[in-house]
Length: 306
Image 1 (cartoon, rainbow, N blue to C red):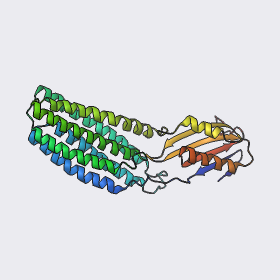
Image 2: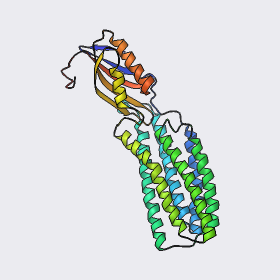
Image 3: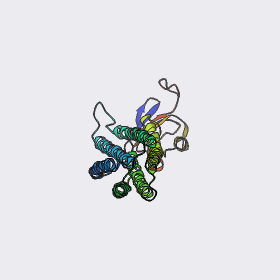
Image 4: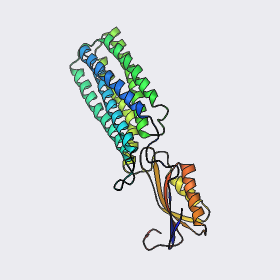
Protein backbone atom coordinates (compact mmCIF):
# COMPACT_ATOMS: atom_id res chain seq x y z
CA UNK A 1 0.00 0.00 0.00
CA UNK A 2 1.39 3.42 -0.93
CA UNK A 3 -0.05 6.84 -0.18
CA UNK A 4 1.44 9.99 -1.76
CA UNK A 5 2.47 12.72 0.69
CA UNK A 6 4.31 15.35 -1.32
CA UNK A 7 7.86 13.97 -1.40
CA UNK A 8 7.36 10.62 0.30
CA UNK A 9 5.20 7.54 0.68
CA UNK A 10 4.30 5.46 3.72
CA UNK A 11 3.83 1.73 3.73
CA UNK A 12 2.46 -0.40 6.55
CA UNK A 13 2.71 -4.18 6.37
CA UNK A 14 0.80 -6.51 8.67
CA UNK A 15 0.88 -9.58 6.48
CA UNK A 16 2.09 -12.55 8.44
CA UNK A 17 1.71 -10.49 11.61
CA UNK A 18 -0.42 -11.68 14.52
CA UNK A 19 -1.43 -9.61 17.51
CA UNK A 20 -0.51 -12.34 19.96
CA UNK A 21 2.15 -14.98 20.56
CA UNK A 22 2.52 -18.25 18.76
CA UNK A 23 0.09 -20.93 19.83
CA UNK A 24 2.03 -22.38 22.71
CA UNK A 25 -0.90 -24.22 24.27
CA UNK A 26 -2.06 -22.72 27.56
CA UNK A 27 -2.88 -26.22 28.82
CA UNK A 28 0.86 -26.83 29.14
CA UNK A 29 1.16 -24.01 31.64
CA UNK A 30 -1.82 -25.35 33.59
CA UNK A 31 -0.45 -28.90 33.71
CA UNK A 32 3.02 -27.68 34.68
CA UNK A 33 1.59 -25.46 37.40
CA UNK A 34 -0.57 -28.13 39.03
CA UNK A 35 2.02 -30.92 38.97
CA UNK A 36 4.93 -28.78 40.12
CA UNK A 37 2.99 -26.95 42.83
CA UNK A 38 1.95 -30.30 44.34
CA UNK A 39 5.54 -31.52 44.18
CA UNK A 40 6.89 -28.33 45.79
CA UNK A 41 4.72 -28.94 48.86
CA UNK A 42 5.85 -32.58 49.10
CA UNK A 43 9.52 -31.78 48.53
CA UNK A 44 9.67 -28.94 51.03
CA UNK A 45 7.93 -31.06 53.66
CA UNK A 46 10.39 -33.88 53.01
CA UNK A 47 13.29 -31.42 53.32
CA UNK A 48 12.03 -30.22 56.70
CA UNK A 49 11.52 -33.78 57.97
CA UNK A 50 14.89 -35.01 56.71
CA UNK A 51 16.78 -31.82 57.58
CA UNK A 52 18.04 -31.45 54.01
CA UNK A 53 18.80 -27.91 52.79
CA UNK A 54 19.37 -29.37 49.32
CA UNK A 55 15.75 -30.56 49.20
CA UNK A 56 14.44 -27.29 50.64
CA UNK A 57 16.62 -25.34 48.20
CA UNK A 58 15.33 -27.37 45.27
CA UNK A 59 11.77 -26.87 46.52
CA UNK A 60 12.34 -23.12 46.64
CA UNK A 61 13.69 -23.18 43.11
CA UNK A 62 10.72 -25.24 41.95
CA UNK A 63 8.38 -22.74 43.62
CA UNK A 64 10.02 -19.90 41.70
CA UNK A 65 9.44 -21.89 38.52
CA UNK A 66 5.79 -22.38 39.46
CA UNK A 67 5.46 -18.61 39.84
CA UNK A 68 7.36 -18.17 36.58
CA UNK A 69 5.00 -20.52 34.77
CA UNK A 70 2.04 -18.62 36.21
CA UNK A 71 3.46 -15.30 34.98
CA UNK A 72 4.31 -16.71 31.55
CA UNK A 73 0.87 -18.27 31.16
CA UNK A 74 -0.85 -15.09 32.30
CA UNK A 75 1.23 -13.01 29.90
CA UNK A 76 0.42 -15.36 27.02
CA UNK A 77 -3.28 -14.94 27.81
CA UNK A 78 -2.92 -11.15 27.97
CA UNK A 79 -1.05 -11.06 24.68
CA UNK A 80 -4.03 -12.65 22.95
CA UNK A 81 -6.29 -9.75 23.92
CA UNK A 82 -7.12 -7.37 21.11
CA UNK A 83 -5.49 -3.96 20.79
CA UNK A 84 -7.55 -0.93 21.83
CA UNK A 85 -7.58 2.85 21.44
CA UNK A 86 -5.13 3.34 24.32
CA UNK A 87 -2.98 0.23 23.78
CA UNK A 88 -2.62 0.23 20.02
CA UNK A 89 -0.04 -2.55 20.13
CA UNK A 90 -2.20 -4.66 22.43
CA UNK A 91 -0.73 -6.51 25.42
CA UNK A 92 2.11 -8.33 23.67
CA UNK A 93 4.73 -6.58 25.80
CA UNK A 94 3.33 -8.43 28.83
CA UNK A 95 5.28 -11.48 27.65
CA UNK A 96 8.51 -9.46 27.83
CA UNK A 97 7.69 -8.20 31.34
CA UNK A 98 6.87 -11.75 32.46
CA UNK A 99 10.18 -13.06 31.15
CA UNK A 100 12.05 -10.25 32.92
CA UNK A 101 10.16 -10.84 36.19
CA UNK A 102 10.86 -14.55 35.88
CA UNK A 103 14.60 -13.94 35.55
CA UNK A 104 14.67 -11.55 38.53
CA UNK A 105 12.67 -14.03 40.62
CA UNK A 106 15.21 -16.76 39.94
CA UNK A 107 18.10 -14.48 40.94
CA UNK A 108 16.31 -13.66 44.20
CA UNK A 109 15.82 -17.39 44.84
CA UNK A 110 19.55 -17.92 44.29
CA UNK A 111 20.34 -15.44 47.04
CA UNK A 112 18.02 -17.18 49.51
CA UNK A 113 19.44 -20.62 48.67
CA UNK A 114 23.05 -19.46 48.98
CA UNK A 115 22.37 -17.73 52.31
CA UNK A 116 20.91 -20.90 53.84
CA UNK A 117 23.70 -23.09 52.44
CA UNK A 118 26.42 -20.87 53.91
CA UNK A 119 24.64 -20.91 57.27
CA UNK A 120 24.64 -24.71 57.22
CA UNK A 121 28.43 -24.77 56.76
CA UNK A 122 28.79 -23.20 60.20
CA UNK A 123 25.96 -25.28 61.68
CA UNK A 124 25.87 -28.67 59.90
CA UNK A 125 22.98 -30.98 60.67
CA UNK A 126 22.38 -34.67 59.94
CA UNK A 127 20.17 -35.36 56.92
CA UNK A 128 18.05 -38.29 55.81
CA UNK A 129 19.93 -39.39 52.69
CA UNK A 130 17.36 -42.02 51.65
CA UNK A 131 14.54 -39.49 51.79
CA UNK A 132 16.64 -37.04 49.76
CA UNK A 133 17.27 -39.61 47.02
CA UNK A 134 13.64 -40.73 46.72
CA UNK A 135 12.10 -37.25 46.69
CA UNK A 136 14.73 -35.79 44.37
CA UNK A 137 14.29 -38.78 42.03
CA UNK A 138 10.58 -38.05 41.77
CA UNK A 139 11.44 -34.39 41.16
CA UNK A 140 13.75 -35.36 38.31
CA UNK A 141 10.93 -37.23 36.55
CA UNK A 142 8.43 -34.39 37.08
CA UNK A 143 10.82 -31.64 35.99
CA UNK A 144 11.97 -33.52 32.91
CA UNK A 145 8.37 -34.29 31.93
CA UNK A 146 7.36 -30.65 32.36
CA UNK A 147 10.35 -29.47 30.30
CA UNK A 148 9.40 -31.80 27.46
CA UNK A 149 5.99 -30.09 27.27
CA UNK A 150 7.79 -26.94 26.12
CA UNK A 151 10.48 -28.56 23.97
CA UNK A 152 8.72 -28.04 20.64
CA UNK A 153 8.17 -24.26 20.93
CA UNK A 154 11.18 -23.21 22.98
CA UNK A 155 12.82 -21.42 20.03
CA UNK A 156 9.67 -19.46 19.12
CA UNK A 157 8.96 -17.61 22.37
CA UNK A 158 11.21 -16.24 25.12
CA UNK A 159 8.64 -17.24 27.74
CA UNK A 160 8.61 -20.81 26.45
CA UNK A 161 12.39 -20.86 26.33
CA UNK A 162 12.53 -19.63 29.91
CA UNK A 163 10.13 -22.33 31.08
CA UNK A 164 12.00 -25.02 29.15
CA UNK A 165 15.46 -24.00 30.40
CA UNK A 166 14.27 -23.73 33.99
CA UNK A 167 12.65 -27.12 33.96
CA UNK A 168 15.66 -28.74 32.31
CA UNK A 169 17.90 -27.08 34.90
CA UNK A 170 15.57 -28.37 37.61
CA UNK A 171 15.85 -31.88 36.22
CA UNK A 172 19.64 -31.64 36.26
CA UNK A 173 19.62 -30.21 39.79
CA UNK A 174 17.29 -32.94 41.04
CA UNK A 175 19.61 -35.54 39.56
CA UNK A 176 22.49 -33.85 41.37
CA UNK A 177 20.57 -34.01 44.64
CA UNK A 178 20.10 -37.76 44.11
CA UNK A 179 23.85 -38.10 43.70
CA UNK A 180 24.40 -35.99 46.86
CA UNK A 181 22.02 -38.20 48.80
CA UNK A 182 23.95 -41.29 47.70
CA UNK A 183 27.25 -39.66 48.65
CA UNK A 184 25.93 -38.78 52.11
CA UNK A 185 24.57 -42.30 52.53
CA UNK A 186 27.95 -43.89 51.85
CA UNK A 187 30.24 -41.27 53.39
CA UNK A 188 28.11 -39.85 56.22
CA UNK A 189 29.51 -36.38 55.41
CA UNK A 190 26.61 -33.94 55.94
CA UNK A 191 28.50 -30.99 54.43
CA UNK A 192 27.83 -32.50 51.01
CA UNK A 193 24.28 -31.19 51.35
CA UNK A 194 25.11 -27.43 51.50
CA UNK A 195 27.79 -27.96 48.85
CA UNK A 196 25.12 -29.31 46.50
CA UNK A 197 22.96 -26.31 47.39
CA UNK A 198 25.70 -23.99 46.14
CA UNK A 199 26.03 -26.03 42.96
CA UNK A 200 22.26 -25.57 42.52
CA UNK A 201 22.76 -21.81 42.78
CA UNK A 202 25.47 -21.90 40.11
CA UNK A 203 23.26 -23.94 37.75
CA UNK A 204 20.32 -21.57 38.22
CA UNK A 205 22.43 -18.46 37.62
CA UNK A 206 24.02 -19.96 34.53
CA UNK A 207 20.67 -20.94 33.02
CA UNK A 208 19.07 -17.60 33.95
CA UNK A 209 21.71 -15.26 32.49
CA UNK A 210 20.57 -15.62 28.87
CA UNK A 211 16.93 -15.15 29.83
CA UNK A 212 17.75 -12.03 31.86
CA UNK A 213 19.86 -10.50 29.09
CA UNK A 214 17.28 -11.16 26.35
CA UNK A 215 14.33 -9.93 28.43
CA UNK A 216 16.15 -6.73 29.46
CA UNK A 217 17.05 -6.07 25.82
CA UNK A 218 13.45 -6.53 24.71
CA UNK A 219 12.18 -4.34 27.55
CA UNK A 220 14.54 -1.60 26.31
CA UNK A 221 13.23 -2.06 22.74
CA UNK A 222 16.52 -3.45 21.48
CA UNK A 223 16.57 -5.61 18.37
CA UNK A 224 15.57 -9.18 19.29
CA UNK A 225 18.24 -11.84 19.48
CA UNK A 226 18.80 -13.33 16.05
CA UNK A 227 17.98 -10.14 14.13
CA UNK A 228 21.11 -8.63 12.54
CA UNK A 229 20.37 -4.90 12.20
CA UNK A 230 23.37 -4.32 9.93
CA UNK A 231 22.19 -7.11 7.63
CA UNK A 232 18.67 -5.63 7.53
CA UNK A 233 20.10 -2.22 6.61
CA UNK A 234 22.32 -3.75 3.92
CA UNK A 235 19.38 -5.74 2.52
CA UNK A 236 17.18 -2.65 2.23
CA UNK A 237 20.01 -0.62 0.75
CA UNK A 238 20.60 -3.32 -1.89
CA UNK A 239 17.06 -2.95 -3.25
CA UNK A 240 17.05 -1.47 -6.79
CA UNK A 241 16.78 2.30 -6.75
CA UNK A 242 17.44 2.75 -3.01
CA UNK A 243 20.31 5.16 -2.35
CA UNK A 244 20.09 5.54 1.43
CA UNK A 245 18.46 4.02 4.53
CA UNK A 246 18.06 6.03 7.72
CA UNK A 247 15.90 6.21 10.84
CA UNK A 248 16.00 2.41 10.94
CA UNK A 249 14.50 1.00 14.13
CA UNK A 250 13.90 -2.68 14.97
CA UNK A 251 12.34 -3.85 18.23
CA UNK A 252 10.23 -6.58 19.77
CA UNK A 253 6.50 -6.02 20.06
CA UNK A 254 6.43 -9.14 22.24
CA UNK A 255 8.60 -12.19 22.79
CA UNK A 256 7.44 -13.56 19.41
CA UNK A 257 6.85 -10.51 17.19
CA UNK A 258 9.27 -8.03 15.67
CA UNK A 259 8.59 -4.56 14.24
CA UNK A 260 10.61 -2.38 11.87
CA UNK A 261 10.43 1.26 10.80
CA UNK A 262 12.74 2.95 8.30
CA UNK A 263 13.09 5.78 5.79
CA UNK A 264 14.21 4.72 2.30
CA UNK A 265 15.63 7.31 -0.11
CA UNK A 266 14.99 6.21 -3.72
CA UNK A 267 14.63 7.37 -7.32
CA UNK A 268 12.14 4.78 -8.57
CA UNK A 269 8.87 5.78 -10.23
CA UNK A 270 7.11 2.61 -8.99
CA UNK A 271 6.92 3.41 -5.27
CA UNK A 272 4.25 0.78 -4.62
CA UNK A 273 6.47 -1.97 -6.04
CA UNK A 274 9.41 -0.79 -3.94
CA UNK A 275 7.28 -0.98 -0.81
CA UNK A 276 6.18 -4.51 -1.67
CA UNK A 277 9.78 -5.58 -2.30
CA UNK A 278 11.04 -4.06 0.97
CA UNK A 279 8.23 -5.58 3.03
CA UNK A 280 8.68 -8.94 1.34
CA UNK A 281 12.40 -8.84 2.13
CA UNK A 282 11.69 -8.11 5.81
CA UNK A 283 9.22 -11.00 6.04
CA UNK A 284 11.03 -13.70 4.08
CA UNK A 285 14.66 -13.06 4.99
CA UNK A 286 14.47 -11.52 8.46
CA UNK A 287 11.08 -12.82 9.72
CA UNK A 288 9.83 -9.31 10.51
CA UNK A 289 6.08 -9.21 9.94
CA UNK A 290 5.25 -5.67 11.10
CA UNK A 291 6.93 -3.02 8.91
CA UNK A 292 6.33 0.71 8.48
CA UNK A 293 8.38 2.29 5.70
CA UNK A 294 8.63 5.89 4.59
CA UNK A 295 9.80 6.46 1.00
CA UNK A 296 11.61 9.71 0.22
CA UNK A 297 12.80 11.22 -3.06
CA UNK A 298 14.44 14.25 -1.49
CA UNK A 299 15.10 16.06 1.81
CA UNK A 300 12.01 16.75 3.89
CA UNK A 301 11.52 19.74 6.21
CA UNK A 302 10.19 17.53 9.04
CA UNK A 303 13.04 14.98 8.77
CA UNK A 304 16.40 16.34 10.01
CA UNK A 305 18.24 13.16 8.97
CA UNK A 306 16.85 13.04 5.44
